[in-house]
Length: 371
Image 1 (spheres, rainbow, N blue to C red):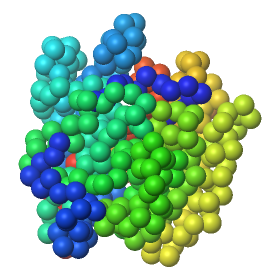
Image 2 (cartoon, helix red, strand yellow):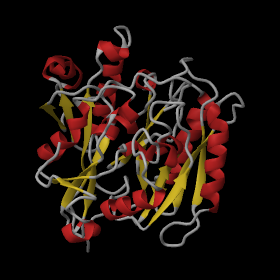
Image 3 (cartoon, rainbow, N blue to C red):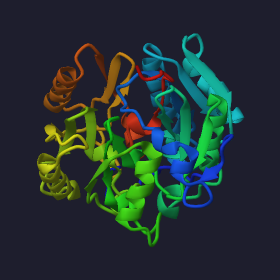
């Protein structure tokens, strides 16, 4: 997510029972997709999906085992609060077993995968008022064909099939880390990702909005500029701004004048402070400063607290070894998520690859009919 060069996010490279493609023969109104919405992350989960894969070819022989330990730590932490479902290549399963054996609430499925970034490779789940689930595939292309993706481009199909839900395939190319929603019709999305010609050449903001609104039940999209070419994701939303609940946004800020993110985050903050959501509410914006001190110094290291993950009854957030910033992030998230346990984890090894806890998780919402 951060870094002056592209981090080792993996050479990535299906569809379930629906296999419909937006923009072709299946219009959203005709298929009933307009009644589906993407829930906000703090709504109830049926499970969290993860992918266990850190190959030496991607991460390096020295780092890969420690990345796997971070994944095991994250899985064990989430399993205290909700079921965890993990995809793993058969050859990697023995190492995963050593990390999670004896831990309840974890289910393992074998599937060939390239890397661990399930937020980007997996489907986005939506739900309708009847409590039916659908999974949306956004055609992962290796963050704009920066890396191979022959296996990871099929992760969405695999998860949809295992979850037993219909899969709808978008005509857009993007990743789940580029989407942030409040569950009530508002989304925050970075232009640098979705409108980037390395993903969607020739696609206008209006046409992207039309499809995203139909697929995800949106009424308003707040577009942030993001920044292209500085990290492999081209500026995913989930590093910059997240909903804590409808009407409340957590935004990262960076005071380091040498950081390219300083100006980006300042522009995002100004836009969010002036924005209203789909219901006409002015957004309350709470800031989370990035740490000024970290244990690692590589340019690819993703140092930021906005990439937290909200599970049932808990919030998981990194800690980076900056006592003041770590403590501030903990207090802020405890204030924003009352009634949930906030756990801080040292995930420096995953952060070396440019991502965080949110990037290696994907929530499957509960299928609950609306009252």
